[in-house]
Length: 265
Image (cartoon, rainbow, N blue to C red; front, side, top):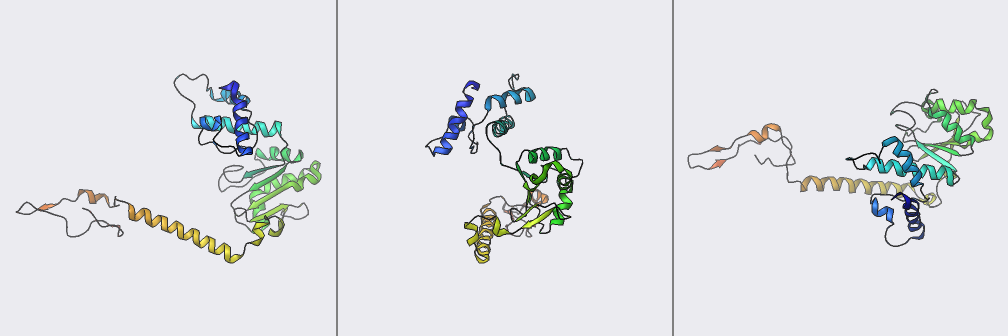
């Protein structure tokens, strides 16, 4: 399979860019595969991961989903770094650059690598779900990186290539060396897509209400279509009583504490 790897991934790219019918050979081999827009260095990526995971040395353990994902991720990184000019790299905050709920402190090992990207003229974006509308709040979470950029005098104007997108892509800040927070607010009108500029508050609110209605409707359908009632552990231990005629009678009082369902005990 390895000698055909480059041909295989090129076929995937051709299918994507040419809108061709059917699927590529790589897509057939890995059905959950997403969309790639660049050729993948699958040979180099496999050899690299094979040194780490010893995939080809296994006798009884086949390649796992995580093995395939690691190979594809490595192949894409190799392709982007060697075959194409990268203009923008974005990172999540929590559980990516730093631990969940923590901050990007000065001793974080990722900071020198981010500075290296900036020095190469690559724009660096930190995309986080934190919905702060004040630059000072983002400075508290990212002060290690922001202070390092401020102290790196060799960056020059390249430090302005650092941006922070917060609030699930609702608030944009860019680096500014002249303010204490190192970040300044960017007006929404300057960065949203042209089609987004026509959106009104009423239209957005209506869309959110529609999504909420669909969500609750789906929940109710799942509840009402369920055939297995949820009940207390004691519910399954309740015994039916027999009368003299041999008929069974269920308990008079329901032992089920979940009101949406009728107890079947």
